[in-house]
Length: 232
Ligand SMILES: Nc1ncnc2c1ncn2[C@@H]1O[C@H](COP(=O)(O)OP(=O)(O)OP(=O)(O)O)[C@@H](O)[C@H]1O
Ligand SMILES: [Mg+2]
Image (cartoon, rainbow, N blue to C red; front, side, top):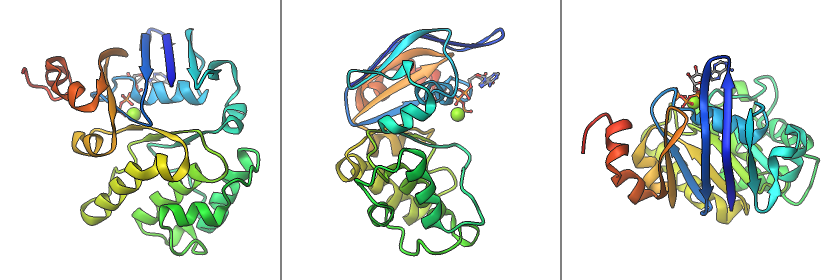
């Protein structure tokens, strides 16, 4: 279980996360909300990329908030980004190997196994030559290599459509079973969130709008009003 208590983050006069208290009780959890709601900032706080003004973050009983980003990586925290973070002039395999090295080189899942779990068929190709879906799979392989415990994904399906999107949805849905890690995923596409996530949080202005089973969160009138822009 992930427990976030009274979390506050501010940048000058902007407060993207405002005394947020939230518990995540399922291995596939979605985060939705309009642009600027604080979704990415929340993942940045979980990763340790921003320092909260106050509050605590516990994951599976461990005080994640007290660890540096590097120690969180060694603990088993992984992240994919809204903007890709791959080295273009290296192979997909080497990009995954760097991730393994960064998180302490725990070989419990090898680079080859990680590539196989995500369905990356040609890991020896240079990232610069890969299609959008294979680049995305490379990022996900970076998240599952070694011994991940919690994987955070920021809009993993952006720019992917059709059959490739369905393939990605299937991969994400099965990821906790295949990787042993819990998944927290941000996306604007409520269809994707519904397919992948057992539970979902809706945020707006850095505060909680709804949290619980995905169907219940999406049915909440405040979600329809604040996220979908309609009144229920
Ligand atoms: N480093 C920063 N410095 C100043 N303001 C920031 C910083 N990071 C985020 N913000 C502000 O915090 C608010 C929340 O941003 P955040 O990126 O968390 O939103 P989001 O929900 O991920 O939005 P989107 O759906 O557009 O990705 C925005 O007003 C943003 O401009
Ligand atoms: Mg964002």
